[in-house]
Length: 450
Image (cartoon, rainbow, N blue to C red; front, side):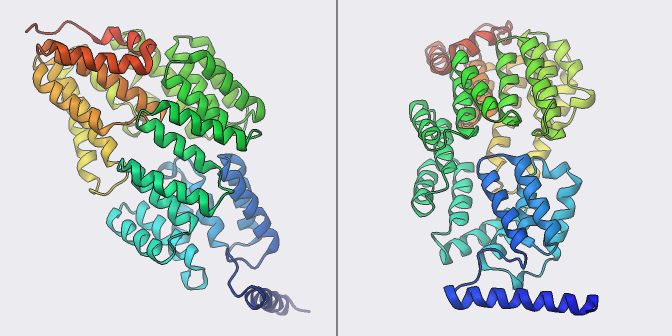
């Protein structure tokens, strides 16, 4: 039999297989592929992704594509499993392939997922929102629609709507136990730490053999100053899965906050010794060590020097460190230039962009820092207040940023003569994590008296 006849026969077998599924079940298969082996790899990839085992997920999705190069859904989920798609060449290739795919052969869900992600990556927030709303109206109980709606609601800090959607997600897809994790972070974002702990513990009860519940509890414990508990949870996560990159990263953060540089280096070495961390994540940990070490030591010149070179990428979250370092070392013009760049990045974000609110908070904080150090504490307090309202405790990084912003807000209020409010703001911050707030004393440099 010739190769051409073999290809034709394989295509006919795939068509017949799909037809049998449609006749027997009355509906199309959930995911479009002609290869049972590819579908098996894809299913394992979905399970790994739900556990936040990204490296495993990537391997399964890549294998599924190898077995069926036309498996569009596998390409979509492989893209989703990449931590930093904006800087990954593979992500650009996958986006191009998704854009060129014939969506008419796919299921409604697959078409939605691909059109939605293409619009999001094109930074067309309005189009992405329209695609999501239309599909959600047609398929209100589709788990992927509910998840996307909840993510969008969380980004705009519509906490009640996000909670309603995640609760519904658990009802329609009980196997999606990671929804409890999302509910935990939702509560954490609002400062409802006891509720967050309850959700994470429920997640751990349902999935005790997975690393992610322990990691989430560890992240919550770091944010709330329970450092010994945090280390136990994160160590357990890595005992269950030694290549669980998130826990290595959180151990790095914990060691830095406790000013234990040797522990930070050991956690970094653990991450580098496995295949679980991407090059992007390893570099992120290295830059955290480089920047946080001099920052928490009050070494502003050291921060300024460290923020150049490999850690100079403005997308790596260095702007706050660098502006404060510039201001505290007499580099006012450099600080102004960095603030201007942050404003430019904000201006480029569409109103509906998921990360716009965080960027608004960052710009307001930087402007507040400039005003505070420049001797205008009352105006600085206004910008810090705005930043505080736009911030949340939803993740460790943003949570620590909120605490730091509250600390300097209190300093600005005190310098402006609003002492009662300053004391209240500082007390609220200390109620979350007094240990971290006490470490920020070096930021209270002498300010003009009022």
